Image 1 (tube, each protein chain N blue to C red):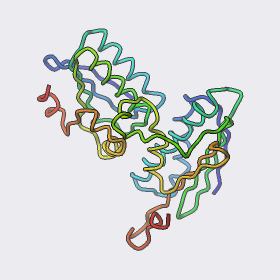
Image 2 (cartoon, chains in turn yellow, purple):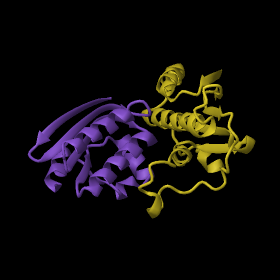
Image 3 (spheres, rainbow over the protein chains, first blue to last red):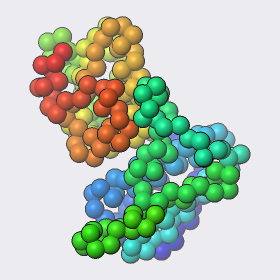
Length: 145
Length: 110
């Protein structure tokens, strides 16, 4: 199943958008942990795209695409901004950054999703979640990356 | 998100319920404004009813921590569920905040 949508650059629309998306993937019978991880990662990616990518410009949209199979979910979020240097993202857990009130979104996404890639000068983030089914020790896709 | 405030001796206890996200974080910030205006210096945030928190929620709690620190106040967090606790562990924010398993333990620490 592929879902593609264009989202206006309005932060207040994000929770409803995510709620509707999570309803659509309910058929996958995901675990509580996977649902939490996907939801949080998606919210962080959309907030970044609207706030930092599109700079809240209402004339620009965020492109969302989800490719869902039985074994994985691939989400792509693309903004219309100038891009950013995704190779030098500061670590928010460093002592001198702990009190910062921003800069945790991508860090959380990288921790909660199984694979994260940037492309198009940082305008597109691709996040992958592999679904755990049966005994995790039989096949752990995390080990492939 | 629903926020219930009560006074336990000299501690302002706020019980949060629901999701702390990009839409509800401003409500938490507003609560902080009220607490500061009322001169509260000991604040407990009971997260037992919180099912989800994002980076905007974390940022709002950090702001609250900073504002209280500035006036010599104290902020304590308690009763997180496992997923919320995991977010604090991933971000290492448990090093910044005083986090307690129960509300009673947090209250005793003030």
